[in-house]
Every structure is written in C-alpha cells, then in structure tokens.
Image 1 (spheres, rainbow, N blue to C red):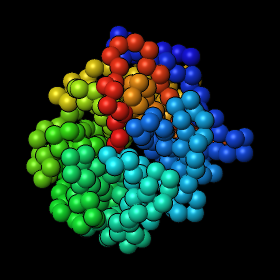
Image 2: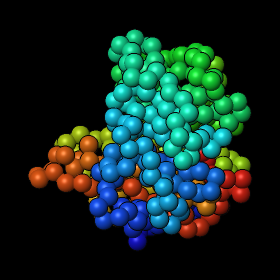
Image 3: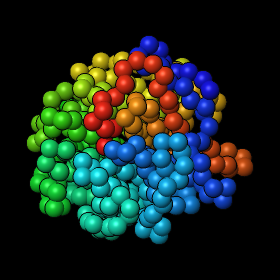
Image 4: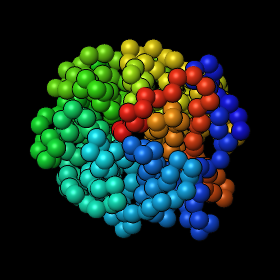
Length: 328
C-alpha cells in the first residue's frame, strides 16, 4: 500500500485492480463507477459483465446488462436509487432499477448528426437533480451540449456550442448537480469545469487543471468535489510531473484542497492511467475507474489488459456525513 495526499485528505491504495472477481471474469476496462446509499459499488465496464455490483469489501453481489450495451461509458445512481447508464456507441441513455430492470430509454439508437446540437451524438454521462429528478446529459464527444430532461424523459432545454469561451465546450465529458441545483460540467479538452444554474446560465469556471474527465460530489455538509484528470502532456514530456493523471479534491468555490498523484501515468501504486469515472462512499473512500485498455493497453506489444479499477481508502480527517454517499 502507498499513501497519497496529506492531512484531512490522506488515502492509501494498493495500486492493484479492486474487486474480487472470479478468475474467468475481467473488467477489460472500467469506464464509470457509482455508489448507492448502502455503499454498494456499481462498476460499468467493457468486460465479462457490463454491470458488476460489489459490496464495499469488493465481493460481487450482482451482475446485469449482458447483451444490452454497445459501449458502456457513464453510470449514475439517482436519488430514487435507480441506475442511469450512458452508452456512447448506440447514443442512448437508459434507466434501470438497482437490480437491472429496464425502466426508460432516451433516444434509443437514434443518433443525431454530429455537432447538430440535437440529442444525442456520442453522449458521455448523466446527472440527476435530487430536488426534482430532472436529468442532465453530457453530450459529449460529437456534440457540444448539455440537455436537460424532466423525470418522464421530456426534453426541457439544451445549451452549449463548440468553442473555448464561457458556455462553450470541447468534449462535454461529465456532469454533476449540487443540492442547490447548480450544474458542474467537466469540459475535458478545455481543461476546466464550468458551472451553470439549472437553466443553463453560465456562473463561473474553474481552470488550473489537467484534462478533467470525471466529476462527482460527496454528501458532506460542504459537498466537496472530486475530479478525475487525464494526463495533459505530449510525447516529449510524458514523464513530466503534476500534469495528471490524478485525482483532485476541491470545494464548491473552486479552491483546490488536495491533489492525489503527481507522477505521470503508470501501473505502480500511487499512479493512474486515465481516471474516467469517480465516486465516493459514506466513509470518504474514493473509487476510480480508468479507461486503461483504450488509452494504453492497446498500444503495448503485445496488447494486454491493465489495471482499471482503484479504491483509495481514506485514512484520516473529516468523514462523510451519515446521510449517505454521493449518488452521481
């Protein structure tokens, strides 16, 4: 085990794949992760079973979704305990019960033209507003939009366009909503988080980060923000430090509280590959899903599967409030 961080934000990790999977199972790569109110962990992945549900000790308690997804990408647990999955290859958002019963589909298999602004064109993630059940879809790789839906799946509004100015996006990769209804968008290739009100009005942006791909909030009184950031260097400085990949912890004012990981990508304990999904449980432990196969494993000779699911165990400091973990 190695330690990352300091003070109130000290964690330990083995650097190995987390989860006690049977020998003949594989994640291949975990793309997203979410935690429910019982601290059960939902790992959305591209391996043997697309949804693997584990307890906090890493034991498998359920699997579902076989044959239902083309390319698993994002997962969110709503305030109702239902599970929202985003598939970026068939351009579809699906809502399930915790046990995998399909409840709703949005835009099922009907991709919009790239950069048309219409839903969806390679969507990436989804967030649910706990106040009213409204859904916000980050759309995504071939669009530059956030779409807001009501709980019944009716489109309410959309905002965003391609670019680098406030309110513009360069890969809308992830999204989360706080208790007041403010919407935080991971604008990955612009290397920032943008904050909007519930009607899409730009409020502020956070810079001074790497390529932010993952975002979630905990359920503490302060609602801390956890970011998963990709490496932002190029080949000639691939061993540069403080360029990601890493996990950052921030408050809602955009102040950095901790950076976890200062070395470049790698499989050694304390390093990351591509933190693509992130979640926090009621104990403050952090789960990080990494798209290590797509970004790194396929380029090895011969290609091989790499670690793609890490757990960072909180050691000291403030624990998360007892009203449950972040569900986004």
